[in-house]
Image 1 (cartoon, helix red, strand yellow):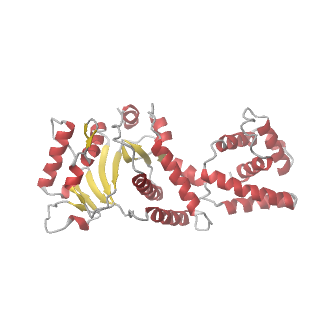
Image 2 (tube, rainbow, N blue to C red):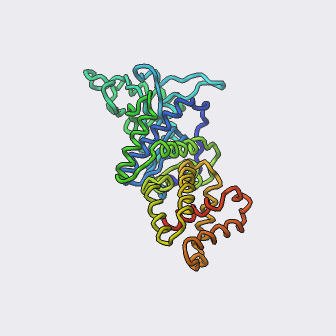
Image 3 (spheres, rainbow, N blue to C red):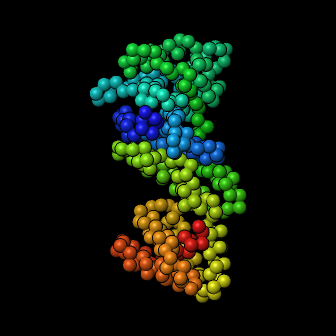
Amino acid sequence: MDLREAIANSTPRERSGSTAADRFEYQRDWALCKLLVLHQSKNDYLLAFDAFDDVILMNGENEPDRIAFFQIKTRKTRSMTLRAMLKQEIGETGPLPSMIGKLYYNKILFPENTEALTLVSNAPFSITLINSDVASTGFKTLRCVELDQQTRNSIRDQLKKEHGLATEPEFVDITSFEVAELPLEGHATFALGRLAEFLETLNPEGSFKPRLIYRTIADEIKRKNNYDGRWSSFDEFLREKGLGRKGFDQVLKTVGAHRDFDWIWSRIEDRLNAEQMPILQTRRLRDVFRRYSIDRASRKDVSLPDLEAVVKGAIGSGTACQQADTASLLNWIVQGVRLSAKSDEFRRYEDDYIRVIGLVAFYDE
């Protein structure tokens, strides 16, 4: 069974309860920063949120064969101890999984494809190392092979007891402990700063609204994180829970990260002026364009993608090429929307709003 089939056929462990809002927001911002790093690497990737663990990473959207699991923990105490990692809280029906136990369950589910199990904490790890002269709290990343034998034995015994294993668990070579760079206090500000740096690298000449773009990406992660339906195929899993290079590129394009909206409007306005569209009409379209830009970036209007699809379909038809000028083309697009099968759903959109969608679709593709 390949990894795609394994994802489609495996059932995640039931969650012990809802994630506290402050912990989820930290987890979301950690995932956002991870997403930016992955996208800059130019390698294929697929991140998925709250599927099998807090965050999982696969080596591509098409034919992945490796998977890494990240469990994100926040603590207000000074350090993360071995005792805390092995502790099992008592739930309504008995002991809940320990941090280490829950993390290792992923290896049980995907024995052939799991390449890494990582426990991430905002606090440093206080655990005994082979080199007892060095304090573990001074490291940002620790591999399980660096822990002393007694500590590894304690983890092994916990895993065998927790999962009822008859054989030795294979965890030492694939388990790591990572101190997050993301601070507990002010994590949203930190993530926003990382996003601003990413956008500047992506398009040095762009004039962006980083807070709006941050909210758009954060909402997309939240939507995928909160999807709790059962997927029947890998493609459905990808659509509902994952975000890869192709999908994130589409999000960036939607919010104008590759080419900012000021640049897009400048290009459109040059065309309208060349065709001598009346100034007042051009200004009216510019004002509507600003509103559409916000709607497009926020992605809160669930009907907007359908309207955009109808407009693009109209432009793609042969009849569109027969329009004499831009004004005629836009009027023809409006008429097509008003006569479409979803005309009742689109009634709330004014004609100029539809014209602006047509302008963006025609001149920014």
